[in-house]
Amino acid sequence: MSDSRTKPRTKAQPKTERPRLYKVILMNDDFTPREFVVSVLKAEFRMNESQAQQVMMTAHRKGSCVVAVYPRDVAETKATRACDAARSRGYPLLFTTEPEE
Ligand code: NFA
Image 1 (tube, protein in one colour):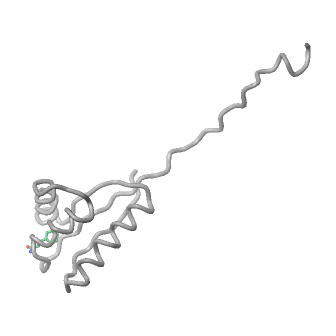
Image 2 (cartoon, protein in one colour):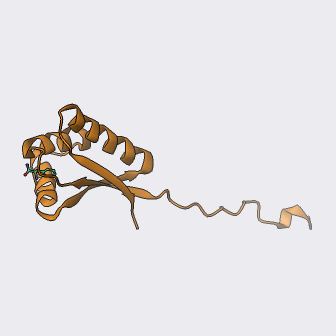
Image 3 (tube, protein in one colour):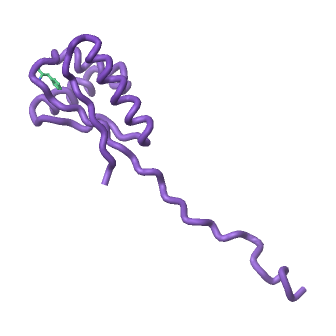
């Protein structure tokens, strides 16, 4: 028992990095009605009325607001769906994504 038995039998765990998370950012514009922004936030990002109002008003006052963070594919899908919903109603509402630090 001087060979393999003396070695640890567990493999070293390779370091796994967590996948980067992406922010979905709501951009302000001068044309999209406030109520429509709130309705999109509720439908696509599962926010309640008061959460959606707060995010909408922050973007309205400051120019933009982080809506939520997700893995990249989820962030991009939600941002695209939210933009498409606005476009289908003729509004310029924009959601962008960017990686977290
Ligand atoms: N600024 C828009 C308005 O006054 C409302 C709005 C808020 C649009 C947040 C886009 C994002 N009707």
